[in-house]
Length: 395
Image 1: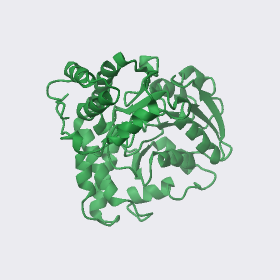
Image 2: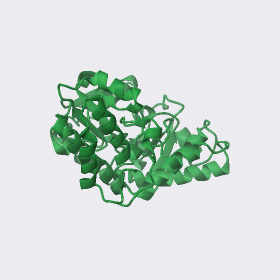
Image 3: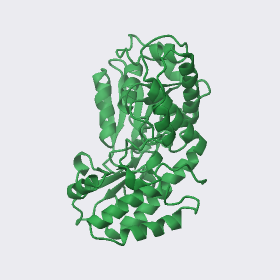
């Protein structure tokens, strides 16, 4: 892995954001955000958008002519747009739910009139492909969260795609915690709709949802019995702006510029290299915190999401008090959601947070809070073991 441009030249001079999103903005994205305003119908903006679309095809691994675009909203808008365009009242939608965001999918599909069929797994465990295969009869769409941010679980998207492929159902994948930090392979898997959030693995400002739509999904959209009920993100209107360059609504131009810069930096680094960064940082953190009694919340190694490290807390750690003190010291980490509140920490290993320097700051302050001055020394040793010399503690 080659050395990268470092976002954290001096992590003591800024807030250290180590949550599972948003992530620190890539410096190129930060600079692009400050450029002067252009109109959303300006030829320069259309050219920028074409470059974004091409890079998104690479990031998602789509068909050569797949439709890609940015929605003006968070990843949840990406989720809702898929259901609004591809599901009609009375359709049966199979939702794979093993955490908060799978449950959100089920709620959204129901609001668009779908009959929701659930395949579940206990918290901390992955959805099993056999369970999906057993419930595919009569299903119009299968919806899956690839990386369940609420629990740090990686669902087996390739294996589930295999069982969905011959069913005739569309396959929609929430790639919010994975796209941009690892190869995705949308076309090869047969995924019809995928989305993420700009503020996650790509380290761009919040406010955009990058989507990719297969040709098969567009064919299904044009065969709808009724118009899409969500006007703002109707596929036809989006296509008119992004491909035909006709007015639909005003896009957030400066966010497009910042996103373009961050996405280009990710493509330049390479998705395999970014994946390796996440995996390596996970090893460093486990080596550092494991001796204190922190353990993996997700028991099986193959089910662990590299970009969101879910750690079960030792009994002596007061979750709320320690995180509050870290926040007072300008460091943000995430606790559990719902049933896992007070039980786990969720550490973001996405984009610009998946580097040694910001986590060294965490270990310095955490060691001071819990009276373990050896913690940062153990961390430095772990970085030395797992990272090449070119990736210094400054980056």
